[in-house]
Image (cartoon, rainbow, N blue to C red; front, side, top):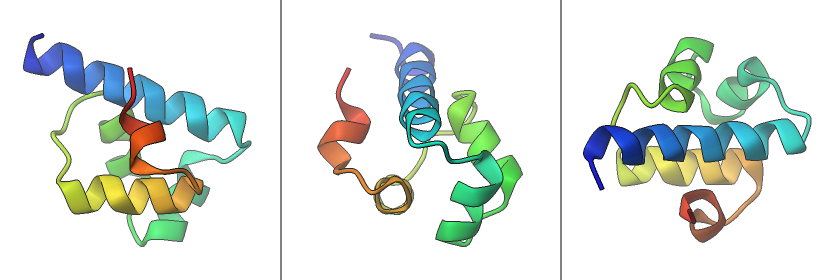
Amino acid sequence: MEKEVLLKKLGERIREIRKEKGITQVQLAHSIGKDQQSVQRLEAGNINPSYYYLYEIAEGLNVSLEQLTKP
């Protein structure tokens, strides 16, 4: 699968989980020490996050990395 497609799917998965939990981008960003624009770019698939950034997102959403990255 192409890199852009994978990043877009990852962003969609993160957005889906965040919305299921009733958390805004601002709240998630604040909980992990990032800004809202960073979370927005991640959800849009515009950045290739590091492993540690994905770990922070998983912690902020209170899910496992596996749940975050499953297709």
